Image (cartoon, rainbow, N blue to C red; front, side, top):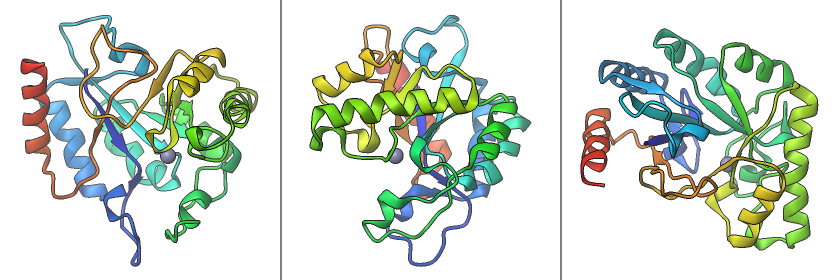
Amino acid sequence: MPALTYHKLGPRPSGVRLRGLYVSAGLFGRQMQELARADYRTAFPGEWWNPPDSSARGVGLTFDDGFENVLRHGLEPMRAHGFHAIQYLVSGLLGKTNEWEQRQGETVERLMDADQVREWLAAGHRIGAHTRSHPWLTRIPLDTAREEIRSSKALLEDTFGVAIRDFCYPYGDWNPAVREAVREAGFETACTTAPGLNRPEGHPFQLRRLTARHTSLQWRTLGTWLRLLGRNG
Ligand SMILES: [Zn+2]
């Protein structure tokens, strides 16, 4: 099953460094429409590698980092088609801004606060954990990495009263020790940034995703790509 990665939705402020992390509201709306026309239904990560119903075309929709602009521009287009997505939240920065990106000179963007996350959940969407402060997990001491992973799950569960089953490695940065720490913390899945489809023989803590961020990549092309991948393995 394919899963798509998004970060930020809506107008791109001037001076942004990583322009490709923005998808305009118009393009996102068209992508959702194309998925609906192609009879896709959305699925949460636990189903990606082991779909309950193989006859339906499934696709995962994921948003990394918990940006407020996703709430503003993403809810309505997904609601219109009955689609549901997962947001991977940086649990220590709820209601704050993209501090880890600003350290690299990136433009400030707001992250959802607790009430906005509740609005996201009330719309039928899901949340997962993306650590507490968005570090490169393989570049910090393993004990610190374990704490980032474990505490991000606990904080989200305490704050929102929902089970947090799904994890996403910041920057797609993992190694076997980090992966084991995610499993030990009680997660059931983890997302990487490796491209490709998810298959039953795949690893639930190495889920693959396809980036949907490039405005130059028209949905028709991506749709064709998904079908080819599905056919040819
Ligand atoms: Zn991230």
